[in-house]
Image (tube, rainbow, N blue to C red; front, side, top):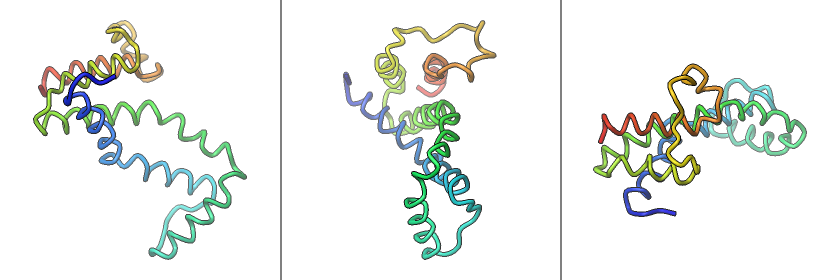
Length: 141
């Protein structure tokens, strides 16, 4: 699937974008609130106790994870954008990220049109993200 080291760097940078944007931590905060009613944590011991309660109770409220689904496109888009700048800052060819995601998502170069710009956050996000990555690459790369 990958064609060169720049594309691997793009995937790694995308995943690093999730870390930098704290997506997992934000997801856990939502789940702790939905499943346990927890809005704040105390010391390390409190965190471990709440985490074990979370593990024990998460199957009882399966719809709690539905709250995360609405954030998926936004989180992927943010990881794309952060990853793009991480990648370019590390000296890799930022154009490679757009090409890789285009092949991975099988958009075949279709990045959407300006007519659908107002609706892009209601789309799956793939075409808009490819378009925006391509546009951002022209500034970063």
